[in-house]
Every structure is written in structure tokens, then in C-alpha cells.
Length: 177
Image 1 (cartoon, rainbow, N blue to C red):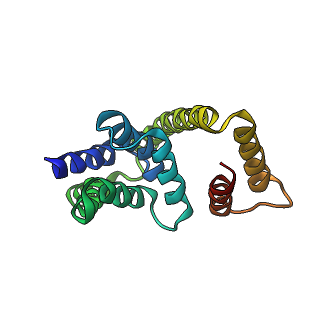
Image 2: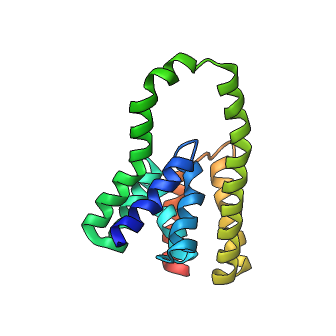
């Protein structure tokens, strides 16, 4: 039953997460933290930060890690398969249809409508992470990390890649928090 639950926890976000890994992260968080209780929001945010720091698709990295934590190596394999299975099934089944209608105005309009929903889901997840950080580390540590991260990534003379900022925040948290 555990492996079935692992499969469902990653297969359902894979089906509903239109837009790739970033769109499915809030859905995975709901399954892993809220529904099954395998992780706390703090632990999930650490897994997300670690996944963002590594190269490759975020959803499969998170699935592999969480699946391993919950069910060992078989759990990791089930979670990674469940993450890629919806895309694999849809691409095989609907390849001809997708190719035929890829330039359709309706498909392009659908993408325009879905983007704000994804932005709201990511914003809600960021807010939850902020609240958790505020409660765990305090307002000054949280504000410091937010301001420094923003400046490092957005200042026109610095422009550090987000992966390096995430690694720096992990190191900072390891030493000071």
C-alpha cells in the first residue's frame, strides 16, 4: 500500500501540473505534506531548495529524494516513474493530436489562462515558506536572506545564478541557524 500511495502522490501532480516541474511543486507539497504527512513544510522546503540547487528537472529530483525517504530505493523508483508517467502516457497517446493542433489559437489561449494560476500556486507556496521561515528563524534572519538573495540575483552588476544563491542560503542556514 505504501508504494501505491507513493505512486499516487507523484502521479496526480504529474497529471494536474500543467506547465512542468514548477507548476507541480505546490501539488506535490500538498500530497507529501498535507495529505500523507510524510514531511513537514520545513523539510519539504529543504528538499525543494536542494532540488533547485542541482541540475535537471526539479520534479523528478524531488520525487526521487522523497520516494527514497519514504520507501527506500523501491520508493524512489516508484516516485520517479510516477512523476514521468503522465507525460510519457500523454505524449505517446496524443502525439498526433498535439502535432496537429500545436499552433491552434485555443491551445495558445489555454496556456495564457493557465499561467496566472501557476503563478498564484507558486506565490502561495512562497508565502507558506516565508511564514515557516519567519516562525522558525525569526524576522531578521528571514528578511536578511530575502534581501541578500534578491540583490544577488537582480542587481545589474552582480547577477548571480539562482543555484549559487540557494547553495549560499543553505550554507548560511547550516552555520547560523
